[in-house]
Image (cartoon, rainbow over all chains, first blue to last red; front, top):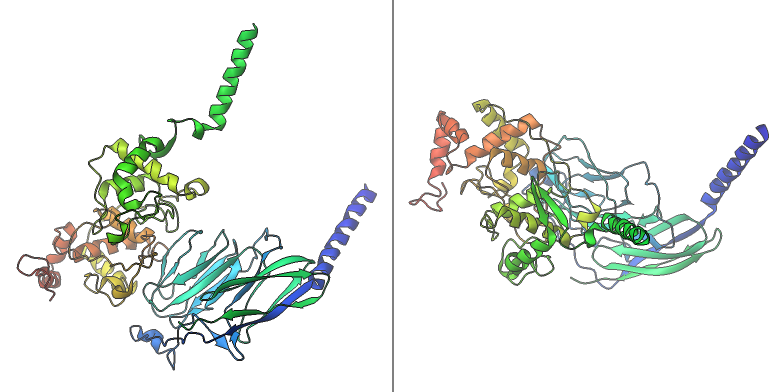
Length: 237
Length: 289
């Protein structure tokens, strides 16, 4: 009995340590998302109808359909593994957080996984209605007055979902519901990193709310770091 | 002996076939249940291609021949997002909700009441309409919300309802006096990006999803999916919801309801209602004061 159990325990230790070892030593894909051409000029938002929000912004904020950084960097691009990685069987335990503050969505693009809890909070002194507009997932629309607890929701199918508030028509955001944990949203410098990728052949896709998506094939062998850059053609309108 | 055995095998196979492939036996398909009625998809198909497809389209996607001329646009049964439900926001309605919608029609839209059809006809139509979207195969309808019995109507209830109307900012779209002219009204669009108007309480007494207080309760506690009207189920307590119902009735100044009568019995109520009533009367049609 002792021998058999000992053997099982030994194997378990080996498996666990192998899994731990494989995690950080996987390959990495990193790169930069940029644009070429002239992107549309973002318009200032008039929040005078909602004074409690307007006074939170010293200078009026602009629309965020295209957000750029220095050296033609493109922000808010969701870079993810669209093929080659297995779907996550269990969603991460921690919720993805989406906040309404100053009549603006923070973040503008929120990426999370299928069946991961999405937590939506209202930090404003005004009522919002959260109205995501999915095509393949279920469409719901909920009111959230100030001071009410966060709304918890989930999506069970991968999809890019525009989000709006009907009360404040300038409010516009996006949910990216993805099948696995290998994703990143490009920030200020347009850079992204997808770490811990086991060896394999991957299709890596970059999605932007105004410029659509594009994909590249990448093969990872061992613990190398591969650079993949994406260039979007900016539209002037 | 042998023939008997053959027959029993044939019978056995037939039983298996019916049990395993019920959907393949023509004329036996029952896909909608409304009380004692059972809707039949095949029967509904004939009715659909006689009465409904002109607007709702050959494929049920709401893009029928007449659709470009209609506002709001006809319902898209492929998307299977429905306004009038007894189920929470984001869920499929129960068959009875759809059946009631077809019988009632949609106030302020081009969808007429199909009360002229028989009850069986309408049940059959629901069965067929459900065949357009795969959602009906992969998802279950939501559990209807619980509507507690209506408490006694009081002035406090109306006043508290008014506070809720302010606090929940219903007026942002529906306007302070319920004319549907709130600050956000002009920019509202439905989920197809088509402009849509918030309900104007002063012009009538029928709501999109019914006429009773019970229907009104369900409208804001389930939301009208596909429109800007959200669900307030998470933010209003059931007992408070009835207060809001009582207050909303007093905004319907052209419809004599117990709520309006009670409200008019107070001085402030009588003044408010009198000031509004010119709107919608033959002499003051369209005049707002």
